[in-house]
Length: 89
Image 1 (cartoon, rainbow, N blue to C red):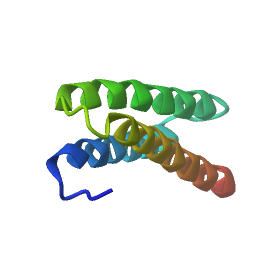
Image 2 (image 1 turned 45 degrees about the vertical axis):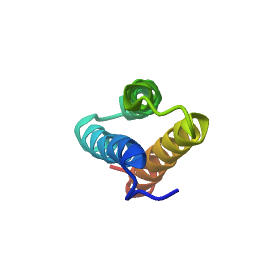
Image 3 (image 1 turned 30 degrees about the vertical axis):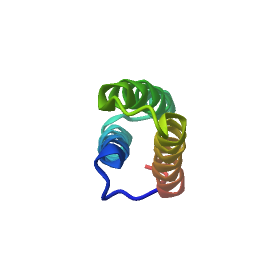
Image 4 (image 1 turned 45 degrees about the horizontal axis):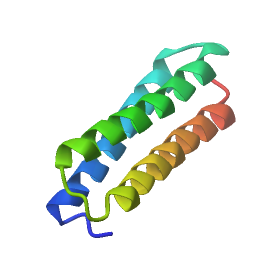
């Protein structure tokens, strides 16, 4: 995976959007609803990842980029959720 290649930029863009959305929602949503918001963030990230990869239009490596997008997004949401859980806010 080389993020300098144009077809991989879409993966990095989805990761960046996922991270921003997860941090904003983790900070803005209070109480037990934060977990639902973070779950929704991960779900939307996968859907956006599919749409973005289809928009790239490159068939070679499609599944690899899709898996990288989904797994990276889930990992970012997991890290934000763990920080929120440890912070206890």
